[in-house]
Image 1: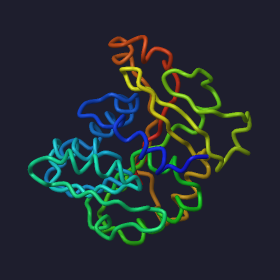
Image 2: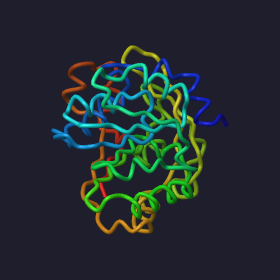
Image 3: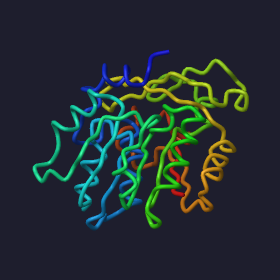
Image 4: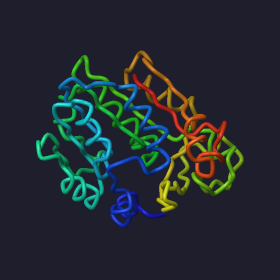
Length: 247
């Protein structure tokens, strides 16, 4: 199984974009931007920032400064190439499993957009523990994941899939599935998913010391997307794709 860093170093250029291209740009990320709304000069941490797509969107929505962190050197290089002239973005190459830069804990909002599907349960717990312990009291923490049930109910390859040879939702917990997600122009992007049950997700949240789930949303394609491009979005009608949680 290839390391996450290897996958993204090899495919960094295919992730670069300045408008929605990947399926999850239209579903999870679009919902995130609408959910956060105007960012009113806030400082945002984008952990698992990739090439900076979300970071640049946060600036457009009014963020004062972005701290982006990713384990892929190539992704960080691309992020630094595309910073706005205002220089309100700082991108750091770091393995969050080993070290969370201290700047992250000073932010007003910490976002982890599809970070934890690349991280096993033990390391996810460690990161949650550090964020709960070190963040500012009023800092918001929001994360997204592929929907845990998705690999067990969707068996097509297009436009989003995981290779799952098990039918056991429970015994597959903490096993890593290889997957693919398509861009709207049919470019295929390799992805990974450490499967965890909803029970495990809530256990990690609770064990870290977060005592309340502020927002929980199951995400998929909506009728508007299907009407715009039935070929691309239509196969996923009625299928749960992602979850977004704020704690």
